[in-house]
Amino acid sequence: MAFGLQIAAPLLPPGLLPHRMTTRQTIPKLLVTGAAGLLGRHVVAACRTTDRVIGLTRRDLDISDAAAVAACLHHYRPEVIINCAAMTNVDACETDRAGAFRHNADGPRHLAEVAHKLGAYLIHISTDYVFDGTQSTPYQTTDPPNPISVYGAAKLAGERAVRDVSPTFAVVRVAGLFGRGGKNFASVIGTLLTRPGVVKGITDNRILPSYAADVAMYIRCLVDARAGGLFHAVSAGEPCSWYAFAALAREQLGPRVQAQLIGVTEAELHRPAKRPMSCVLAHSADPARGLPPLRDWREALAESLRSESLS
Ligand SMILES: NC(=O)c1ccc[n+]([C@@H]2O[C@H](COP(=O)([O-])OP(=O)(O)OC[C@H]3O[C@@H](n4cnc5c(N)ncnc54)[C@H](OP(=O)(O)O)[C@@H]3O)[C@@H](O)[C@H]2O)c1
Image (cartoon, rainbow, N blue to C red):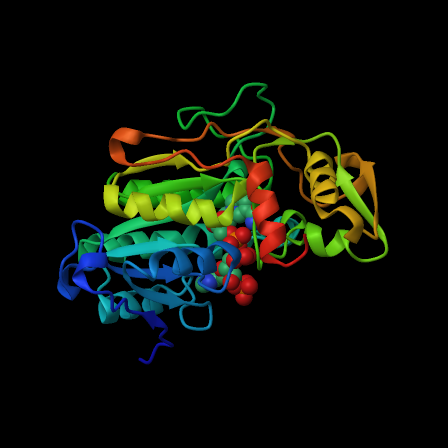
C-alpha cells in the first residue's frame, strides 16, 4: 500500500538541537493525521524544526478505515502520533450521526489500538463541546462531560476510546480554535471584516478560545513530557463572546474594516446543533512537566490578523 508522504526532516547541526537530541537517530519520529486542517498544519509547522514529521492529509490516510490505519502505522512506525483529524462541522454532524461517530470515535480508536501495539505515544485532540456549557466556573479536566450535540457525543466517545486503550495516551481538549488557514468564524473574522457586508457575532456565549499556533507549541511540549491523561489547552485572558472577539478584531484592524458588525443571540441563528453556551475550559499548565500557559487570546488574535496581513 502506498501512502502520500510529506516528511520534514530537520538537518540542524547538533549544537542547535534540543538538549536531549544529539543525533538523527534520537530525533523523534512524529506522525500527524489531519495535517491539512487548521491545527494539523500548525502542529506540523511547530514540530518540523526539531522532529522528523510525517504529515498525512485525509487523502493520505482516512483514520476511519481500520485496515488503512494499521497498514500506515506499521509502515512508518512513528514514536508519536498526533491526531488532528476530525469531522469538525458541528451542524453536519447533527444530521450525519453515523459519519460523526465514524470519524470522531472509530478513527481515534483505530489509531489508539495500533499505537498501543507499536508502543507509540498518542496525542488525540478533543473539544470543549463534550460539556453542556451550563457551568458558571471554568471546566476542569475532572468535571463530568455531558455533550448536548452529536458532535460532542462523538468526540467524547473518541476520547473514551483512546483512554480505554491506554492511560499513557494524552487527550487535549481545545475550544474555539482560531488561526491562519482555518475555516471557522474565529479564523476568518479578519477576512469577513475587511470586506463589505454584515458580520454577525454571537453575544450570549462565553468562551476562552485556543490559538492554533500556541496549542501546537503546547502539544510539542507534551511530546517531550510524554504525559498521559486529559489536558485543556486554551489561551489566557478573560472569557469572551464571539461578538466581543469580533469587536476586538475590528479594533485591531482599524481603518481596513469595511463590514458592519452586529450582535445576535445563538437562538437567532437557528442552527441545527446546540452549542454549549458558557464553556470556559481551565487551562492545564504544569511547569513541573514542562506544560506552559498559553498567551492571552487578545495578543494571539493580533498575531493571527498580522499573519494574514490584515492588520
Ligand atoms: N475548530 C474548532 O473551533 C475546534 C474547537 C474545539 C475542538 N476542535 C478539535 O480540534 C481538532 C482540530 O480541528 P481543526 O479546527 O484543525 O479542524 P479542521 O480544520 O476541520 O481539520 C480537520 C482535518 O481532518 C480531516 N479529516 C476529517 N475526517 C478525517 C478522517 N476520517 N481521516 C483523516 N482526516 C480526516 C479533514 O479533512 P476534510 O477537510 O477533507 O474533511 C481536515 O483536513 C479536532 O479534533 C477538532 O474536533 C476544533
